[in-house]
Amino acid sequence: MKLSLAIVALALAVPTASYAQDSTAVSNGKYPNTFSSGSANVSPFTNQSKRFNDWSISAGAGVPLMQSADLTSIKNGNGKNLFGYSAYVSIDKAITHAFGLKLQYDRGETRQGWFNTKDAAPDATAVGARTQYDALSLLGDINFSNLLRRVDNHSPFRWALHGYAGIGTIAYRAYQKDATGQRMVTEIKPFQLGSMFAQAGAGLKFKVNRRIDIEGRLMYVVTGDDEFDGGGDKYSAINQREEQVSDNFFNATLGVTLKLGKHESHLMWHDPLQEIYYKLDVLANKNQDIEVCKKGDADNDGVCDDWDRQLDTPAGARVDGAGVALDTDLDGVIDLYDKCVTVPGPVENNGCPTTPTGPVVETETKLEGIEFDLNSDRILPSNTPILNNAVNYINSSTGSYSVIGATDTRGTDAYNQKLSERRANNVKNYLIKNGVQSTKINALGKGEKDLKYPECEPATKCPEWKNRANRRVYFEAK
Image 1 (cartoon, rainbow, N blue to C red):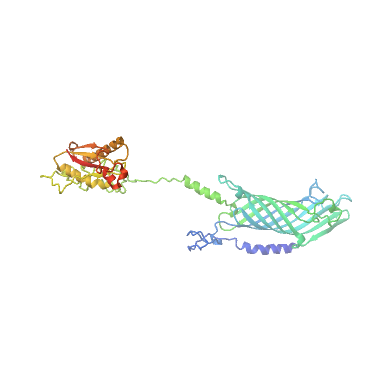
Image 2 (cartoon, rainbow, N blue to C red):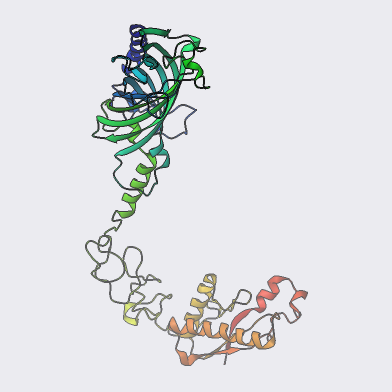
C-alpha cells in the first residue's frame, strides 16, 4: 500500500519537476499576433519569458492529534495525551503570485485511546489504538499576504501567511489493543470511494533566502471514516460512544521549502503592486532638473549662447529665436536704434527716409484712411502698408494734418465719441513712432457724427461693408 502511493506520487512529480529550471527571458523580436494588445513589446508567455521561479519542493514532519473521534489523542476527550508522528513531501507550482497548487504525499501514525499500544493495557477496560496512514492529495495554496498586503507597506517582505485546502485519497491500517492483546481492526486501500478525504489549514512561511523557506503549518484532516481511530466496526461498542461519522485529526508540522529555478525570486514572494508603486516612487524622487544654458547668456537677450547667433546683442534690443536683433524694415538699422521702424531709411538718418526735394506728386502718393473692427481701436496688420505710406506722405509734405476717428451708429453717443478718440490717438502714436513729427499732426474724434454713409443710421439699414466703412480713421489737411 505505501509503496503504491509513493510510486504514483513519483510518477506525477517527475514530468512537472522537469520544467522547473526555467531560463532568462529572451525576446525573438517578432510582432505579436492579433490576440495581443498590439504593442510591439508584447511577446508570447513561455518558459523562456518568465521572470520568476514558480516551482518548489517542500518537506516536513510533525505531530498528528486525533480530535474528533471515539478514541482521541487528547486528555479531555476519549483518551489521554498521546503523540504520533507525521511527515510530508510535496511538489509545488505557483500559478500566480497569490495562488498555487501542491501535489502532496503524507505518511504518519496517529495514537489514541487511554494508553500507548507499545505499552501493556493498564486494566481490563482500557483501550488503546494506533493508525498508520498514507495519503496523496492535491491542495490549493492561497497567499493571503500578497492578497491583503497594503501598497504603502514598505517593510521587508519576509513573512507570508498561506491557506491550504484540498482533497485526495487515504489508505490506512488501524490497530486496537486491550487486555487481550493487539490486533488490526480495519484496513483501507487507496483509490477507492471510501478512501477519499479532505484537509484544510494554514501555514506561516519565513523566507530564509532566495532558495529556502521554512514553514509552520497546522492542518485539519477530515477522513470521512468512523473506523479510522481504531474503534473497529462502525457498529462496535467503541464506535457508538460518539455520534459523528468522521474521525478527524489535527496535524501540526514544521517544514522546509526548496525553490527551484535560475531566477532571483519566486513568484509567490513577488507582489506586482509593490513593484509598480516602487517604480513610481523612484520616478517621483528622481531629480528631474534639466540643465539649460550650460554656456550662459552673455548678452542677456534671453537666448542661450548654445544657439545664439549674435552674442553681442545691444541691451534692450528685441531679438528673434536665434538671438539676432530685429530689423523690421530691413534697412540695416535694428529696431532699437531705428527712428522709423517700419519705413526703410539710410543709417545716416537713423533709419528714416530722407525728405525728397521738389513738390509731392499726388498721383504717386495718396493719403488714405484705414478701417477698424467692430468695437475695437486696434490697428489691423493689413493696414500697416497704408499707414507707412502716410508716414512718407506727411514727412514729404510741408503742411500739417488732422487724424480724425469715426464710428458706426451702434452704441451710445458718449461711448462712440471715446472710441473714435482712441482710434485717432492710436493712429497718431503709430505715425509719430515711425518718424512723423508730433507738431505736424493732431488727433480728433468725431464719434458717429461723421458717417461716410449717412444713410446707415441705424446700422441695421445698411450692409455690413458700409458700416465697416463708417468705422474709420482718415486724414485731413489743416
